[in-house]
Length: 247
Image 1 (cartoon, rainbow, N blue to C red):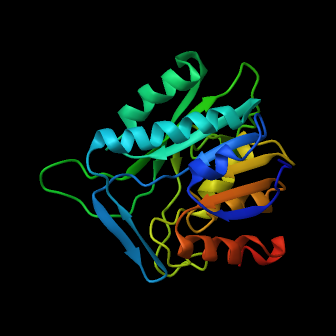
Image 2 (cartoon, helix red, strand yellow):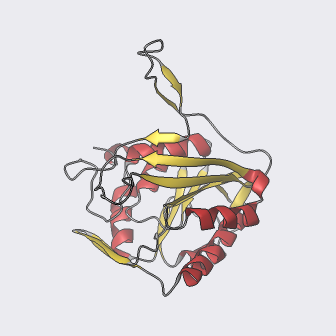
């Protein structure tokens, strides 16, 4: 099948990926359902985020991660966005599928917003597991403002803790889709791990933020989602001139 560039597909990603050629993707970024056991809902979208049990959920994910491994070029990499519920399971799963020696980073996205509890430390981060397909992989270290007095006004290489606020209710980029991630986070990840002109695959693309990050950074993209509302929003955001994607 011919490679499709800059497209948002309405399908289960397992079906769509089986129709794609081997070694055709430079970066897979996925922000799958977290198996929270709840219905995720906001004004412009909703989806059910629960499985009968953890084993069923992990089997669902393993089948799809196996296809993602097949699709990656030898120089490609994967970034799996998850949280405390399943991060430890995914780390073992990715070690098995990609090889423990192909682990690159366990990134922490520290987003700051949200509630707290009198019975535990406040949960204020997500996890992003970063693995490479082969021995050589693309990486361009992001630069962030330095915070020390000695380097004030300069930039430094980003660490594995990414302090980027989540989207507030008044943000211009907000499209009202549940679990939408900030564009600044996805731009940092895509620009770091996908070469210019390369191909980004987001198999659970939701409202399409990773696809917008790819397009605005000079990369190509394939987005997939089985939620019709998500696909409509992602197509509206992504399949238009780059200059109109970011307000």
